[in-house]
Image (tube, rainbow, N blue to C red; front, side, top):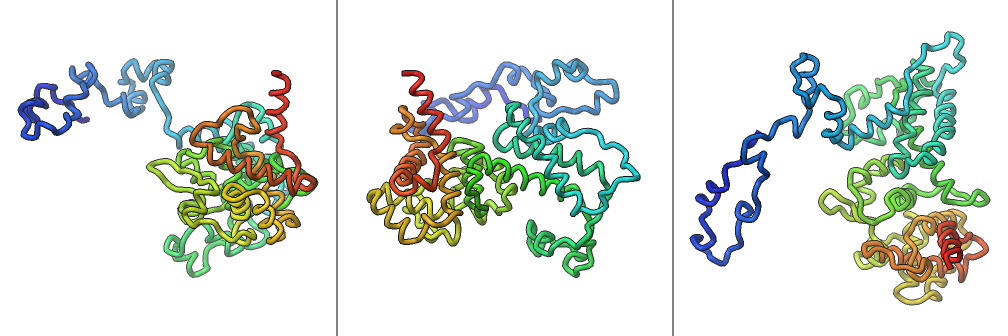
Length: 389
């Protein structure tokens, strides 16, 4: 525990403003700030910072620990502990495995795990769970179903790509490097992977129409889900990292410096113009990622005009690509609305992304109105404005 010295001690060390050698230097933090009374009087306690529950087990705990209401009123769980609570609150105790259980292999169990997630995720969203927490909430039902049939093995060995995709060669153990590990083994992580994929797939289905839905590339999915989850261009890096795991991306390698930048403990999404200025736009035909094609169109419309954007659209055959049309539909559902369409200005940080929305919506109306439906979020806003008037 670090104790603060009295203010006079600091002044004696640093000197008063008039006594300092450099009279024009700014005042120190000790001159500008005064510690709280409990710090100056030595009343601050270790338990104000971290709980020590061993005292509860020994029966020597102070009132702060003995009284649950007081304890939890003064306790702020870390993000990791919050995630753990969320999983266990949703998960249920594992029942004894039925000897007549017909599920013998992971290939039989995986569809059941996905079905368990599907059966609960809409309920969780209706209950107010949104964003990254919605994907985390999928873990409970997945682990619950998984535990009913544990232990279990694979009928076919795990594909090599799945064994090593999350780790570099340096991180693999000797058995894995020699190919002698149990390729038929199944762990709870397999259930969590299935839950992530199913939760992501469910949410993407909510953002796109069922008549023409195509599988998007991971980078475009991450962009869509990031805007959908956070609704602002700047959000915690740790949250972005968890979302990257949902879609199977390496955040630092695949996203940072390509679609976003890291600033302190946050990640900041780039709009089309920022990416173009920094030379970070990929091929306009979407061969690297469909978000590149979308950002090329938005930037062309913003920097030149809509006709130039339509020429780029036609020149790369994007109007005939089901995947591009699905990506455009999803992006239009999550980007912030511009003042032209919503009737009010977006927050300053979201203004560039709102300009992308306006450019893309104008392009959709000009060239893709029959292939891509109007954004549902725009229809809701227009309905509200009509009702208010």
